[in-house]
Length: 506
Image 1: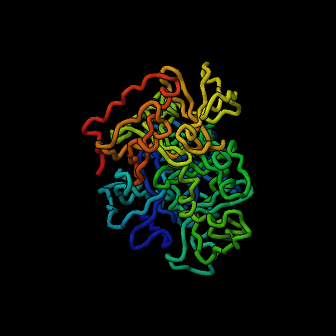
Image 2: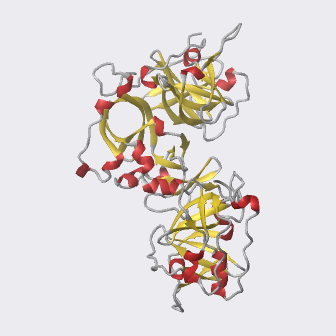
Image 3: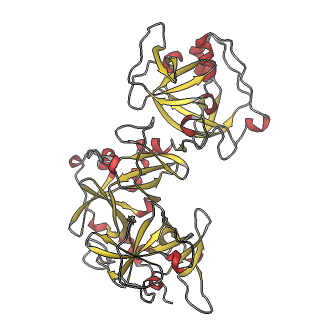
């Protein structure tokens, strides 16, 4: 059995870069040198007059009729089809075919020393090495694409993709001078994104309306059991709007603090791009020059080459990524399906802005809803914006900033209401959500809660806490205390954390 050797463009002394794929019930890796692109699998495949184990048929791929193989049949495993499966296009020695896969799980650089060669005393293996995934620790097999392509009776088609040499280079380019990118079609534009920034891909993200919705974020979609913000790349770049309701695919990126899904019309291909082929663009010629490395020509198509690091550090992307929450239905009755306790066992806190950033125990917030289009004004006093009808009740809407002695906030696309129920609901208007994180530090010796008549001093007298990876000390507001005060109820003492919860992280 001949092993597939990754091209120089995907390997360095630190290791090889692989595309991570879930197929036939196992985790496999493909060197980027043989992985051409990933496309949705059609519901029906055309028949081929060939007899080979695992051959499902053929699909139209632009100008190519591509044979599609299901390795589950080759391995003798159940082979029921299900929606959402994709076809991974692989190419070896000028020949290509498609592999049916359940999902693509991003890319990973694997140290050479981590690869364990595999062999069999008799017969033939479809994989050459195994390793532990550097992030998940899961056992992963390096698929031997040559062994798949060369199976007896299996038809292949000529690889019409660009050559393995770097696009835009006049000849071989040292590996340090080129980068592997995935090409994405977004409306009239083709974007190139470094594969190192691609966590995984999704079919048809279909965003749902959310409190996060705005010009850049049309809504949220489900990913890994969470509601994750969908981002319109064209809106982010200032190049118009994609119209994400018809987006055919999504590219998941990991900012380190959470995920977002870039909505795209299509995943076109994976290719190598020479560093010298990227042409800088004058800053005045594009709306967001800080998010672009420049332009490149790929087989006659002009691509906008994204600056992946700048994209992941963009304030709007970071803010949206920080708002990943468990998918709706995961914890009924919580805001957006959010859990009350994090995976670490620490209580969850909601951080938001009222002109300054503050936080509150998530369990105090019954619901998070978009700011209503209309509020019936009552003008009864400072901080009272009016009344809205919500879930069959007349709910007062209060400007939390004003109650805390801060300037009244202007309503923007990011404004929302935090609904707190103390027997009677109250909706606090805030100007933006920040994140949901576990409590990491609180000082057990801090003073207690203020009296019912001291709302203007609440910020000054509230205990300070740290949440998530944030190193700032944030005022921890007791929103239920504020709600009771506004309803004229007697303050209810807030139980202090148990001794083992008072100091979670030093």
